View 1 (cartoon, rainbow, N blue to C red):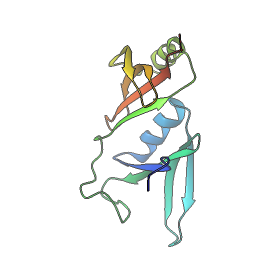
View 2 (view 1 turned 45 degrees about the vertical axis):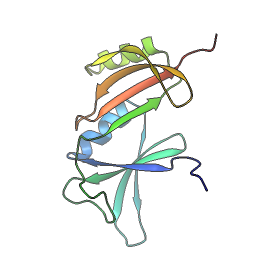
View 3 (view 1 turned 90 degrees about the vertical axis):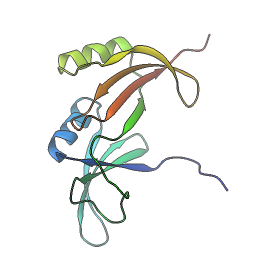
Length: 133
């Protein structure tokens, strides 16, 4: 038995609106509102074939992490965009680049990464695959 892929993950957030705005405007994700079987409205951020479900800090849905906390995540997102274009995009939106561009090792090989923070101060790594030689 083995796991094949990641369907979604959950972020606990302090400010739902600020989080949605950051992931939509800065990272290009789509905000989704959806109803679950019990009629509860939930919010998710969709990108590619994955999504990030959002839980409001203090009002998380069960089941949940044992100790849900805003700002405890470290996420790496792959992009097909050029690193130089991302640097400009982040500067235009006044997003501080904490580190980068730097070379790292991703799940499938070498990547070039920029590090920023989301509104909850989660560490967000924006990466591009390094071209093969």
